[in-house]
Image 1 (tube, rainbow over the protein chains, first blue to last red):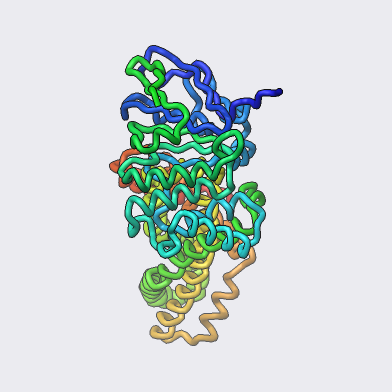
Image 2: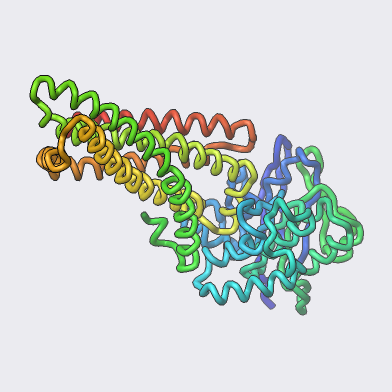
Length: 227
Length: 230
C-alpha cells in the first residue's frame, strides 16, 4: 500500500520572535488546527502555505511544491488548487457578495459567464446566502461575510483548504455548519477535503470534527492538544 | 500588456467593465472642468493676443499661438494636471485602501494577479481618458479662440484659415504622443504608490499625496523632454 504525500507540510519553520522552529504535516483528508496567541506569528502559516510569503528559514511544501519558489504566473495558477479564507475575509468592498464569489471563477477558469453564474448560484445556496448575494460586504453581517468568504474559498472545489481565523465571532452552531461545508462531505479516508485552520481558539463543539489540534507555545514549539 | 493577454474571457469582461468605470470617472465626469478651463484660458489669451497683435498687423501669428502654445503645449499639460489631480488621487487612495483591507493579498491568495484586476483597467482607463479629454480641451480651445477673435472683428473664415495653415502633422502626432505619455504617467505612478502601502490606514493619505506630487513632477519632466526632443 502506498502512502499518499501530505498535501501540506511545514519543515523547520520558525514563527514570529520564537526561538524554536517546528515541523508539521497535514495528512490528506484530515482537519488540523494550529492555535496560538495573536502575536505568535501564527497568521503567517497560511501565507507560507500559499507562497504569499517565504518563511525566514525552513520551507512550506504544498502538494510537495515550494509555492514561493515558483515563477509568478505558475505561482498564481498553483494557488487556484488551494482554497484560502484569509483573516478578515479579504472580500472586495466594491463588489457584491455574489461577485466576490464569482471573481476567482471569472479570472481563473475558462468557464462561460453562464456557467459561472450557475456555479455561483449553487455556491450561494450551499452557504445559505441565496437572499443576500447582492449585498456589499459592508452591508452584510459577520456571519454572511464569513459564509461568502468560505464560498469563494471553495469555488474551485479544492482538495486543500487553508482557513485563517474562520470561526472568530461566530456562534458554535454557525461555526459547525461552516466547518461541515468546508469538509465537503465524507469519503472512506475521512473528510473529502484536507483542511488547515489557524486561529486563537476553536469552539469546543467543533473539536470532534477536527482530527488534530496543536497549540503554539511562546517559544515557537507545537504542543498537541487532546481532542 | 502581458497581463492583458493572459486574461480569461470572463476575466477580460470584468477588466473591461472596471476600465469603463474608470473612463466614466476620469474622462466623462471631468469634461465640464476641462471645458471650463480650456474655454476661459483660450478666450483670455486669444482676446489679448488679437488686440496686441492687431496693433502691429501680425494677427496671422494667432494661428501659431493657438497651435503651438495652446493645442500642443498647454492643452496636454493642463489636461494631465486635471487628470492627475482628480483621478491620480482617487486611484492611489483606492488601491491603498485595497491593500490596507487585505484585498490585494486575498486576490493573490485566490490566484488572481492584482496587476490584472486592479492596475490594468485603471492604466487603460487613464490612457483613453487622457486622450479623450485632450481632444475635448483642444476643440474647446479652438472654438473659444474663434469666439475671442470674432469679438475683436476677425471673420470666422480667416480665423480657421490661419489655424489650418499653422497646423502641421508634427503638431498632431506630438499632441497624441503627449496624451499617451501623460496618460501612462497618471495610470502607473498612482497605482505604484497605492500598492506600495503596507497595513496602516494612516498611510493612505500619504500615498495619495505622494502619488499626485510624483505624477505632476513626472508630467512636467516629460513635457520638458518633449520640448527638448521636438
